[in-house]
Length: 170
Image 1 (cartoon, helix red, strand yellow):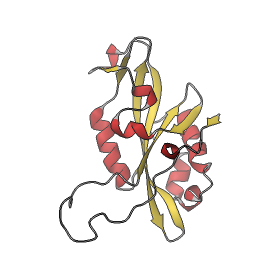
Image 2 (cartoon, rainbow, N blue to C red):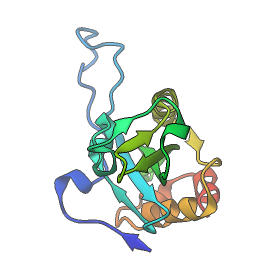
Image 3 (cartoon, rainbow, N blue to C red):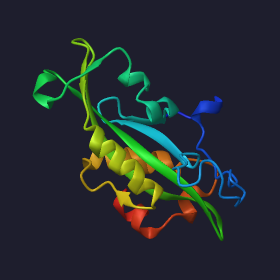
Image 4 (spheres, rainbow, N blue to C red):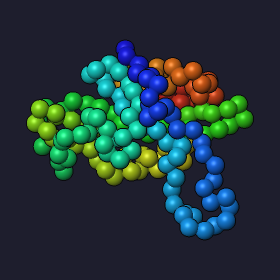
């Protein structure tokens, strides 16, 4: 298994920011903030998991230079990836993984085609922000890679996380 943790700024989990409105209720109230969310790519084929913040805008390395198809059958020889939306919160003991939701991504680089359900990605991003753990549809190997990746950070995020998350990724 390979765990990529370069010191590159884009390869770090986003930590909680202050309230941008400072309680004044002005412009931006009611908008969703993605400041606490990070995107992890899990590749069971490559046996690795890594941060790729460009996935937040559908511009991750595996998503570049492909055309999205409406139907998964239009992606002839797909490689499976998971984009996992990870939301970090701060609790009494410190930062922890509050929401973790995985979404399927099928990519056929040689044919420059890909498939993902945008509705699923948007829904799971929202559920991650709300502190949900949704990984039961992921294959066991991918869940193990994700669990090893999340537990590998020097911060105590993993230790401070819920037992529900730990059990889901064992």
